[in-house]
Length: 564
Image (cartoon, rainbow, N blue to C red):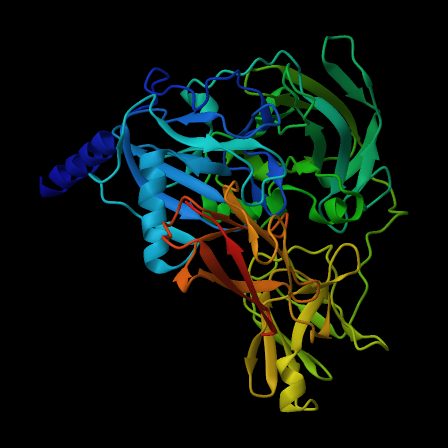
């Protein structure tokens, strides 16, 4: 009896805190036609896209509206990532997220700046009380922008449930014109055991496609296979008013008419998002920039997006039998592209065998490992990688260490440590651990210095080495000059740059008072709004200290004249 009572309480609590989806509860976050540059669940680097990206006509400053009644529950301001982001928790239990904003609405902006000045920090995270910042449906809460890691003006918009799981905003009535069916860019077959083969190959096999008789259908060339196999597809979707290649909504597969596999992008949790690297063929993505979505589930895959995965979506092909495998690829508007794959069960010798280069280091997924090469050690925690493999740890004549290669995805951070006992205390101050980026340029990797050991925690395999930075940051005034009047300026603009280890921190004052400098790392620009503080005097003494990631520092001073 008591057990039934508590079960009732649990479900009652859930029902009242999270109401069923109603398309009438929310309005659009913008008053312009909704055109998307990014869809929910879209495949991104190491994560799924957690919302929709709404185009803002290549402009900033569009009014952003609260989609429903609620309160501002979080404000997060950061240089990268979402940039300026606002979170509104609604009375029905959902939370809406608005990111890459230019600025907040006046009352919210005033609240934010007060806290930034109190903490003397541009980057800040605030959690207002439930009754502090009440907003109504249709109220202007912000203005669209291009802040953070945004690649162009747009609004990143999310809806999350009461467990902070992002949900597809299209489920809530967001309307987008879409009459296009998904496009298939490539179809692939995989042999999923050592003895399995597709067309005598144990490697990935790209299949040829031709148009079928039915509209929006394709037929693959007949394949001959045996053992356990699976398929993968490289596909994208686009809407009517944009040319962006967006993600698909649903993928199903059928074997002889019986559904054996399906995933749908309605909801996922942030904790599982990195498992995207088990959904796609990560190696092919790194080598050829193709995101092939697997129609089967690998052992380390813990994604919750699967509606069905009989035998993990893998198909056992028996000698002498014929199979018809059908893939149905859909967008949210149910526009569907169909791919049919004829399969003949035929045992054949494997002429193309998948090979793996052997090294002295074999890394198993279910164990932790510590690997050593001269002055470098690599600590790999348990379940860092998705599978077992031979790990390459080597050194070249330039002192660069190969920490395997970027074709393997890491799920957790591993630690790379350098012994720096051969360097003097003065030399160590300017040293840091660097990796080579995609353009073979040194890139700062967050470096912890403890005595003779420098270490970095990372999820990126590749080339690492010790780099030196002895050059302090460069500070350049943009819209003012020493001892000049600038009364007509609304903003003070200063460019800061550090090419080697990068800018770590900055602090600015005018006449001894701390000023809020907004940092745009994409433009390497610091901006101060003269409306923030009132100065009675006309003469202003500016002092700016900029420090890079190894501690080199530049102090810039200047005097200018301005009346409020």
